[in-house]
Image (cartoon, rainbow over all chains, first blue to last red; front, side):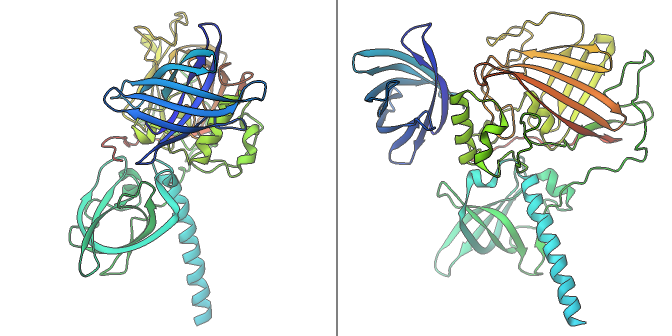
Length: 105
Length: 377
């Protein structure tokens, strides 16, 4: 799970944005950050269900207008046997929902 | 006299330390700091239980006793190729030998140490030091460009030589021409503040590059998973490149002395560029679909169809499946290959940009066999 994951997110097939997610497994918890840069969004809490490899995390950061918003993200890790495993699922901020797909690089 | 000897010894030791420090950088398959914490130095003394002489890195397993308990440690060293070049072999030490090791401890808390300094206790000899390989001095430095009978430059071995390859790149990290940013042998920036000089990043790519640099390139899939390198990185690795011209078949096989015996094919038969991120029958994805043609004395190669599962530069520059490379190879004289690459990847960069460097011909030699196999965490 630890590493940098790169892919895209959006609200439809044409409205896509690049996203970088850094995940670290410390041995007892998952930490990380979305878009590690000046506008980084730290992951507040995260958990994984290893029976189905479902990952849930929540992060708080600024939206495009600078307002603080909470992101809720749920995804499933696939291609577990490869280094370049994938994580895909859904996200929502308030009433806005969308999907994402990222690959560990 | 004594003072003179002390000064001479000090100078010799300083020179040796400088050489070996540099060599350690050159020799490693990964940045030591990616796996070992420079803030956690350690010294241990123990008895060797096993010599693990494998690629990509040699390990010594050592039993360390404090009188009441014994713990097992793994000492990681350079790779077999660089150690062998420096005069060391798998029987330099044997099980039962006592050694003292100073180095840094693994970040993940496991009992592993990077062997900065290994000393054989019985003799006091420092062992497994690595001397940087020196570029060969040509016995014919002014020799002109070798050519085929039709006048086209030869990119490989000229008549009269028994093999050869290109190595010793004049730059070991990909950055836009003119940037002139100091980096180490792994592509780590000396000053992270120089980041915006390296390439015209899209914001996400800049963030990811900065993260990779801050974390000592620890996620490099070549290190973590023995994944191949591709693109211009092939021409900046320390173990050389072969361009095998198969004129009868109108293609060039491009081998490199690093990785897992990988190669790519450059088609010169006029076929169309069909590379796509999804791949196809002749598209290996990691190396892209390469088609080339001669423009005067320059071979111009157009490559598309890369995936984004590898790093295409030593320092961790990001790319996307939109990556499109145009490479130009010229051989201005016998001993020089000038390599130029234009990077067009609107997914990761705001505009196309160009980098170039020279490689040196190593005559009458086989490509070194250094493979990333038997990888261990």
